[in-house]
Image (cartoon, rainbow, N blue to C red; front, side):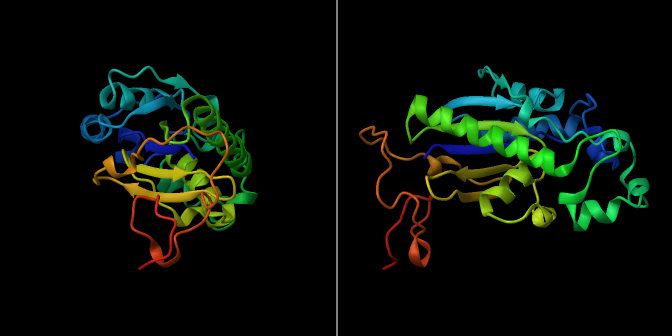
Length: 239
């Protein structure tokens, strides 16, 4: 049960100006650089077994500022959605497009002109997250923690999958710039440990080392009845 930290890149000028950057190579603005440095203070104490990133420059800049000692691996599956003709357009203008209500209310049916479908975006992002999680656990053990830096809709799609909700509900999820979202996969179900965390202490996510075993323990996939004691590790009944 490795633990995945999903980090959204810091703010860009496109974010600040209400535009849709898509796969354009927009860079962090001053606020985004400050956000990246701040989240780095929270992440630096984490024993990260692997760091992967979207290939876009705003994600790579975020990691350069947050984790300057890391050597991220580029993962194409975590790249932003290909919004096609929508890229570079103001969101106010896009809100008048006939496709906008579909993106908002029925994203699983949305296909961007000259771009990709949101369903395809979700499928390849989720596949990348699960593939890397299995790899990290196989190489580093079930206590391993790893980080992936990506984009808002990508993170929302991975969270929706973890929660077992249909993609049509993913617009209810929020992933702010430089936020950390935490997922722990298990043989039966994923657990969403944190969502859109922009200031909390992450040290509680580190689990004590135990004798390594490739076989999951009974109860590893069980939810904590009554809520548990926090940290995502208490599987017993409440007292």
